[in-house]
Amino acid sequence: MKYKISHDTQYTFSTPVFPEPHYLRLRPQVTPHQRVDAFALHISPTPTGISHLRDGENNLIDFCWFDGEHNHLRIRAESLVTIAEHNPFHFILYPDTALTLPFSYTDQQRKVLHTALLAAPIGADLLAYGQRLLAAAHFQTTNFLTQITREIQADFTSIYRETGPPLPPDQTFTDRVGSCRDLSWMLIHLLRTMGLAARFVSGYNYIDADDPEFELHAWVEVFLPGAGWVGFDPTHGLVAGMSHIPLVASADFENTMPVSGTIRGSARSTLTSTLVIERLG
Image 1 (cartoon, helix red, strand yellow):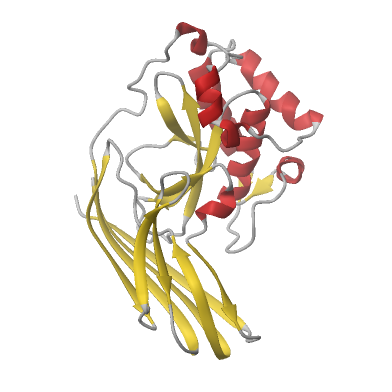
Image 2 (tube, helix red, strand yellow; image 1 turned 120 degrees about the vertical axis):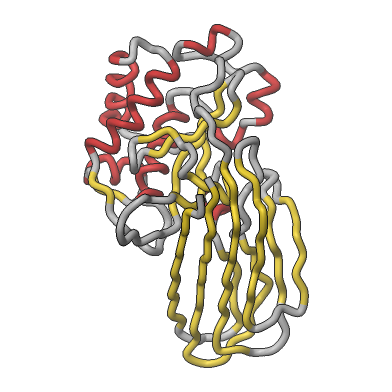
């Protein structure tokens, strides 16, 4: 699959402000199945400088800085991405102890995965929901992860929430309603509580529809011994595959924001964003 992506983000300020340096997380990842054929950033006002860096979790970030005061900040990211046809279940779990839950990571793995294992406290009802599905999957790791991803899609109502951090996991569970980031954040902390390393992924999801409305999407990756990071999308009840285009992954959702930075000034700001994804073949 080849995709052409145009992602336009604009902040308009009521009075001129001085933009502090900004981090941009809009560059698609290069993975064993995903190739970035072209990528370009168009930024207004023109930055004084821009650098490319790897963050602490090995995500590729564009870092830009500015001079002077401005009444807007517009960032347009244009990408051309190819995703090779592949089977997302083409892996084995190794050693065999990872075939069933609970299992233990090695000491070395736990050191590397430390932040992805830090679970926020969750209520007994949410934990019981996970344990019920684990028993129904006969404690088999892959079956459980697939089933809980499907169950969340069936049991919860997905809504669009343009801004704001993910809601607390227990609130999402009680309300049975959430955005993609709410459902992902809930699943992440449930899995961490059950002993699995899980992280938050921000990216794009292509929907084949007559008149699709695209938005930035969030899903979950779980570290499985022998397989590495495997993606699960609780919003759509799917294992992440050829329609998922990851940008950045982190143990903390705050490190996946597409644009982050501050301004000097007391102006009011208005955010507008448009995303267009075309499948070219």
